[in-house]
Length: 309
Image (cartoon, rainbow, N blue to C red):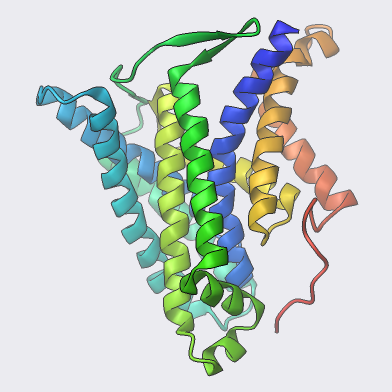
């Protein structure tokens, strides 16, 4: 029972990271009907930028507390990813907005490869360690162990997701985003600046990706120029699981995928008689993706909709 509870805790923390990245996928798809496969690399860039700032502050021996150093690195990463997301939309996607569906999809894959190589040129191929600047407190919870970092990641993720729901449901920008997602041409006739709304959607999604990238680097203690590939695929699987285009579906899908992956990794050895180990945990994300696409293509909270021309 203790092992099961520990895996549940680990899964919720991991799932909250997936949910933040999945929100970026689902926001862009909801408005543009585009799968932004470069979103995982934006997450990676956020982690790499934050680590560069954190390492610089640590080497400067500024005497700042670890939490402030992390906040500084995350803030710079958010700003950098917001600029990156806006640039990607403006240069790579906007000129292809009326092109056949395959063109922006291929462009997204191309942007992903470009970002990977840019990161490799700047930071190299090696893994970059996350410095030990955060509290390492541990708390017993019904036989399981809960760390300060896990609490921080989960609470911050919940706060960010709650803020995003409030933004989309209660603000003028949120109404403009929902109107653009429903019918961009009609929204434009009603005075909504569709280009601005789409640009802001990319900016917000990229900011969420930056936060998730920093969380992932802090949680696993490392970052790498290729880390966005797996993160992006898993977050995309989470978005499809919950119902891509649905914000609450992306959150639910991320949490469920994190739970499935963590619990599966904890018991896959027992279930297969030791043939498979916990290092096969990535299998669960893609197995879930296949099952959802076969049996419920619209996802858990998705609805059957008519595609826009």
